[in-house]
Length: 251
Length: 225
Image (tube, rainbow over all chains, first blue to last red; front, side, top):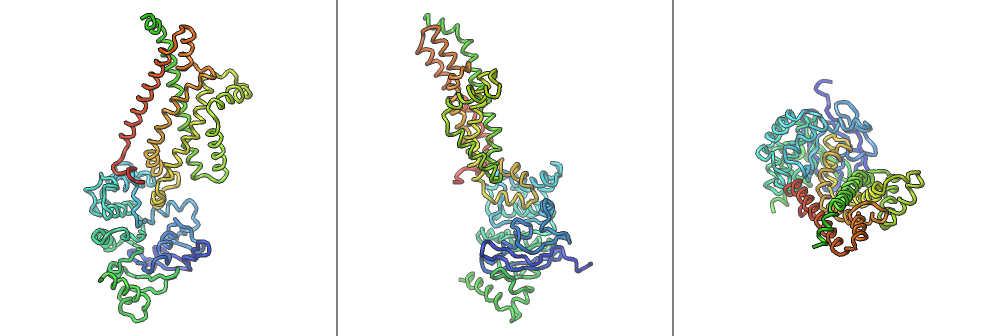
């Protein structure tokens, strides 16, 4: 397979809630080290798409493969795949009863069954990677939103995942905190982490993404490199969408 | 003065009653915990059958007066199972324990349901099984939230133990009543055991408050509502 080997393949994902079709057949492939950014209006299924990848939401139709192994319909092996597919949430979802370092190490201890010393060392290393080692013994309630999100990124990283899904990681943060989280994500992209990112941060999308996928009404309507989206006249809908954000941000 | 000398003689007798009362409280709370917590989990995570069986259970045990339950078990259920020789103390623990389980299950259910959905989602996203997520993420939070409400069970069960007098458990009130019959001293004896109940109540609540403080986590469970 060589250079063409895809780490993640997503094939024709459909999802409906009652009569409302949220995803109408989404497919894409991801190579190791790639960052793909999903943009588009709210309610077009971007978050649902991410949750269908690690099966937190079960798709009605379509298949997902991680390293050529099927993730969909994998029964209890899904718990193995989820270790390999990290996820970062809009509202962080840190475990409220655990300190930062214990948030990072709990899955190492309970899921990976690492011994206590090795798990602690790994957890501290990941906290260092996101600049949170000084906050290791603080509880989530004592952290700012940006700090909490960085801890949750460390928690995902600690499992040594093949890919990390970011579900609007900065949407709950003010601009300053957004910047500190985006900084961490940019570094990860540079270090070769494979990432799928749903975001409204156009600057991040255009500067970090290998490919931007513009979704509308449950479908990927336009996709291309950031340069194509900005310069190629064919990408009118994406440009309109990005333009709206720019106008708003400049007001 | 005579009264005091007479009462002093009875202290060992009354002390045994105190032990019985304490034993009743602790055993009943333990039975309630052992059955109540799984019932709460069953009511939230179980299938329809499990949920409805638990609802009927809760409805039954919360719907009958304690004394009626005691009589049903002592004169009905235990004898019909050929267990008439079971001591009243055990019957009382079974009744107060199973009744406590009904109340405790609802305390735990409320606490578990107050934990945000995101906690389970995040745990599962890391590869935890549902059981692991409940064990390591949901319960440690829910039990902390449940503790103040659960503490309320202690005085409830403590005061309920006096009703076990009705089936002849040798607890405080039973023994006090026997003393009254023997000595014709009434108010001093009942005042004395009232004092004992108050003291037990105070000590237990103090201990539970300390447990609450000891297990509290900065910023957790305060002002969440």
